[in-house]
Image 1 (cartoon, rainbow, N blue to C red):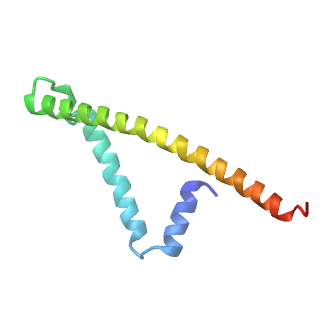
Image 2: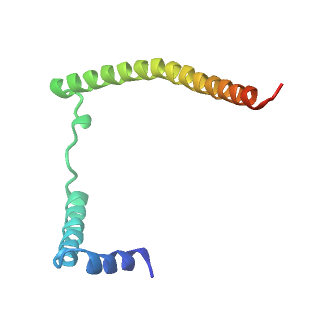
Image 3: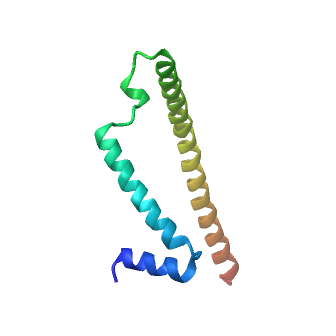
Length: 104
């Protein structure tokens, strides 16, 4: 059974009675949208860099991205220290278990 057939059968078995018809409608609408977009592509804000509002938004998003990158670098150091600490704690736990079980 193909993945598409499996999806249809699962919809019939577990879904709402109308799920199959909704899915068919969705597929048809998607095909229509695709054909319309081929004839008349949707406008995007990035294609118009002269628009000041979009340019401002892009600049703000780039600044936010740089801040997130800086935060991630700081967090990476914390994560590395945390992992080293866990490793040391495991080694200490192993040594203390060994000491407790060694009769000498």
